[in-house]
Image (cartoon, rainbow over all chains, first blue to last red; front, side, top):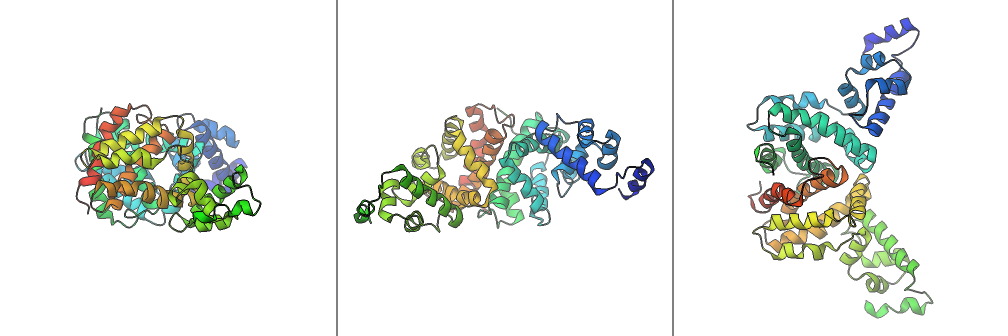
Length: 201
Length: 201
């Protein structure tokens, strides 16, 4: 992104200035929260921030990239989840769980991840989770795994992972809070695998 | 302690007045939230509310009763869960799930139950959930079922139920939001049963 600072200077703007970037990000957060992921466009964010749509693309890439930037996630879930999706259905529950625990157990990640969880208390945070995390982050994993009714199955998977997040990371409830990663996988991988492959009602 | 019940009246108070009851309840909420379930006593609540401990017992019964009153639950979970605990381990996951869905699907219950969930954003709400809901409400069910390591198993059960609460009732995420109760039971009862009976790591 440092290479873009000079292009703004040519147009007389200073798009590399932190306040322009921050204004775009603030507008994106507000729009994603109020209109959801599906109801928000790069064009709409640009208009709200008072900049050209091309500038939004330039700084943040695609709408998905912008959405992830607005969520302030510490890692790119698409990168983290790629090996889960690519490894095939066999053992997918275990791979998903190992990735999930590795990201969440990393203390550098926890503050921003937990902020997202606390945001569930507000309608805007609920919308981000429903439209964004479920549809944009988990949905593609299910589709890449080639399961039938992928969105539904990933919602079941999410219902277990969210509960682990609440008990282990938000509440620090035992025995989950101090359970070793391998034990966590032993307990929960069969559950996730069942949600991925067993017949749905 | 009941011998002192009239002491408030002797001091010229009106213990039956709504504001006295409300003061006790407010003190209880504050203390349970700040000190947790285990760290709160009837005596402490009474002192904080400026009344005699007997008066607290008189209006609210036991510490467990006071805790449930402070949570403002729409139903008494001990009453609701009694048939789950009494029915034995066979089919316990399914009975627990049916009770859980019946209580949560009742629209009269949802506002106060969801308020409890939104409270998870605050440390006080987290403490109430960890010390109270898990230990006081779910723990006894596990002990009554006679499973080994009941608190640990009920924490696993809770990690799935909390996730269903978040997806189905808080986020309204499909397919969980519109799933019929029987289908929900078909999907999740095997998970709960496994957490109750399978070997723990």
